[in-house]
Image (cartoon, rainbow, N blue to C red; front, side, top):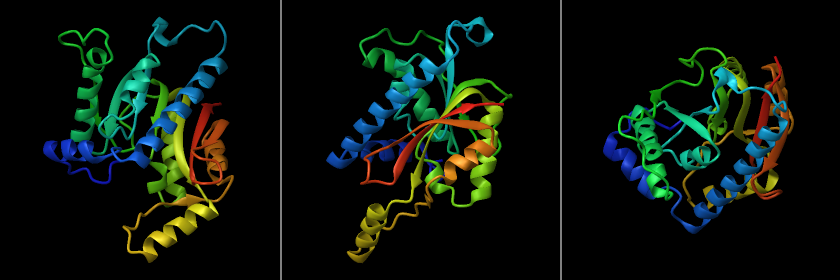
Length: 237
């Protein structure tokens, strides 16, 4: 989740103003959006044809955790999801909900109706405060590379399985020699050190399978160049 649960409201706005503004960050963001759209389209194709939506409602609900300031909120809403924004930092979740409320007007659509509720929740991924099977999608981007212990990853994936009704879209860092070299060079030249956990090939998928998921697809952010991967998981039991 966000690196701290102690963000102030002003601190969240400052963080939002600085993140994904540089050219390289904008390139990464655009690539993430493209891959996320592709993977969620694949999830839609994999749903059982003609099956009734949950609760006989045409809407689908996504848990965005950790949501940060809501960088992916517009993408999820464009794809038809009602978004529940959750983060270890409540101020982050509240900002994401504000961005969700503003999305309609910003995209040229109708602004949110007065009194429309965009939920913001302070939540720990290892102990989700939600009923079983309540979310059509659990969306967890840029989180698992901060989870260093295998048992913690396994516990979180089991919680995702419990709260999910179908699909989970996550990111993780798979061991990549070029990326490891890049990080070593950054340290050599005095650049800031990032505490990222890279996982050996196949290990994340095995952990997901043990938690009750089938891995539908894994996409690298930039094949051969970067350790970052996106994985679409489907609940099997």
